[in-house]
Image (tube, rainbow, N blue to C red; front, side, top):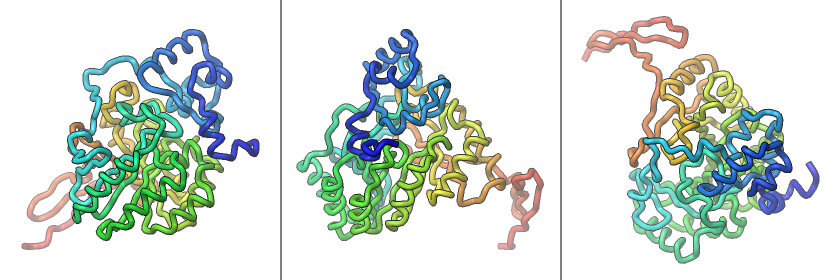
Length: 358
C-alpha cells in the first residue's frame, strides 16, 4: 500500500461516494450505473479505498462488493420491512440514549461511518449527517446516565465512534468514566474491518487510560481478515482491550458452514472472540440479505463440536419491535422426565443423564 494510504484521514477523505468514482475501480455496465444511482437516492454509499481494494473486480458476487456496493434489490419493498426494526426510538428516554436492558445503555454519538454497509440496521438515520453529537446533546445524555445508578455498562456506538477525532472520543469517554457507577465502557466499531489504519498509537494510548474498555467489531467474511486488520486488532488487544466480534448472517455472503468456520477460526487467531451471530434485521431495503432462521440454526449445528467452543458465537435474533436479543440454537435435548434427560451430541449419538432425586 502506498505510504499516504496508510493514513486513516486520507482514507476517510478519499472514500468512494459516487458512481463516477466507483466505475474507476470496478467495471460497471450502464445499467449497473443507473441502478446504483437509483439506490443512492435512498441510502448513501461510502467505501474506503482500502476496503474497495479487497473487492475482486471480476466477480459480481464478491462478498466484499455485496456489503459495500448498492444493489437495485435495496429498492424493492418487503412487507416485513421496518424503519426502526429494533424499536430503539421507543426505548430512548433522551436523545442519543437507548435504555432497553436494566443495567446498560446504548449511547449513539455520531451518524457517520467510514463505510455505509448495505445491510445497515440503522439505515433510517446513519449517513444523514457527517458530524458527531453536539456538546449540549452529549451533556444531556451524560446527565441521564449519571442520574440512573443502575447503569453500569455504556456501549458507545453510532454510526461509528472511531470516525471521530481521538480528542472528541476521549472527551466522551472521560465524561462517562467520571460517573462512579459506570463500570464498563464499550465501543462498537467496524473500523478494524473497513479502515484498520485508524487504530493508531495515539488512539490506543488514549484508550488505555480509561480501562476497563471493551470493543466489539464486525467482521462478516474471511476475506476481510487481512494483515492490515490483524495488525489493527493486535494493537487494540496489546493495549489491554478485549475484542469481540458481531457477525450478521447474510444471504450469499456467509450463509454456509464452511465460510463461517473460516471466519470464526481466523478471528480467534487474531485474538478476536466471536460474540454474536445475528439474524439479519428487518430494516428497509435489506430483505435480499435475510436468510431463513433454519439456515442459521443448521450452520451453528454443523460447527458445534467441530470447532472449539470459544470460537462459537451465540446465534440470536434481535427481536423486532424492541424485544431484545433472543438466543436460537439446535435442541440437543431429545427428551426429559423426572428420571433422566436424553441428549444428542454433535455426532448425533444419544446419551442418558440421570436426574438427581429431589
